[in-house]
Image 1: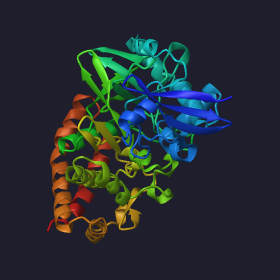
Image 2 (image 1 turned 90 degrees about the vertical axis):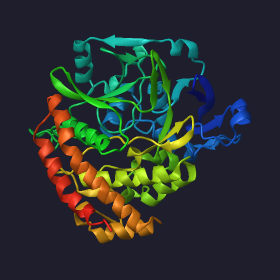
Image 3 (image 1 turned 135 degrees about the vertical axis):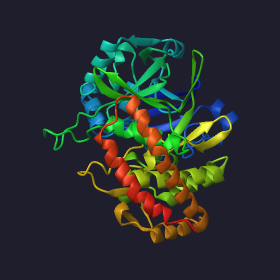
Image 4 (image 1 turned 180 degrees about the vertical axis):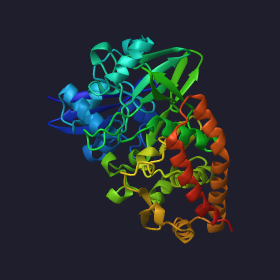
Amino acid sequence: MAERLWIVRDGTTIADVERDDGRLELRFRPEVVARSNGAALLSVSLPVRAAPYAEAELLPFLAGLLPEGLVRERLARRFRLSVSDVFGFLRAIGRDCAGALSIVEEGTDLEAERNAGIEWLSDEQLAQRVAELGTRPLADEPAAGIRISLAGVQDKMALVVDGDRIGLPRGTTPSTHILKPASVERRGGRGDKLAYPSLVANEAFCTVLAAQANLRAPSVEIRRVGGEPALLIARYDRAVTGAEVTRIHQEDLCQALGIAPDLKYEADGGPGLGACLGILRRWSVDVLTDQQEMMDRVAFNYVIGNADAHAKNTSLLHGREGIRLAPAYDLLSTLVYDHLPPGMAVAINGMYDGNALRAVHWKKEFSRLGLNESLYGNRFAALAERVTRAIPGARERLQRWGAGNGVLDGIVSRIAERARLLHDLRS
């Protein structure tokens, strides 16, 4: 017997996902096709059309809405699903996804879901939910109407923040923030050393540094939850006006290119810079600005030593004025963790080892991408200078949050080394 899910955007069901005999198919509603044929309501890789989309076409987008890695495995155990059961996961936790979408079972009372409300948490209850993330990933609790999906491999939870109040959204109530607690992962799985010490301070510092270097990045702050630091991130795919929260659609570049999440790294067969810029050139309503900012982020991720800037960590934002590059996110220095490989997520002039890059490699990459070598060489040098000047202010912010610690020294040291190389690009 066929099973069906509704895909809801802005309170309206726009498409149905059907599973029949194990195969998936997506079909836009006829009234949506009549008024929006060709529009990217879900993804630029799945424009509205009358013909249905087969599983191979739609799976990269749907799978891209879900968590990955250990979080996915824990959810599979919790809900007794196969880790590959995308339909089952979306049915269980698809009420609040990235972007403007809610995914619900056929026959769901949409009005009741919209009015399901918020489970407000005391400080102690929030700390308890964070402590339980290992067994209750994403803080999902379907019996209480909490069905949230967040992509990525890190433990996190989506929250509603209203002044001093923090809560979990029920039904299709949109969240406003993401909370990332300190990593408890150990070296070798059961070692006595943390695999990623000071991860909260690392991401907070790099995100603040990006904003102070004039890159668009979400607002963040460090809060203490149960005595431990946690990173609270304002969602850029939500607009808050008074008590009203509106979803803004977004998709990552793997989804936009129709590429499965497990191919997010170029070395694994995923998209390189050329493909990512190609999406901007085709879809952005301000190609020049977005192209320049995309390349500025490449320089920033290089200079901070972020080897995890893959295609799922860059997104398109579908705003009222059209499609634009979304703000930067998941910014951190991976190089300060010496057990992680130094290879970059995308190649520069065919090279993945950021430590081996020289000015000539960057210039050849600019040429390969069809970019003016002098213009982008100067942009990269200017970006390196802005980052260097922003370091004291970013460190001061972290100190106010009580997070000025040794990991920042390691990041700043790497910035100094790599900024010198980018300065050599100035013509």
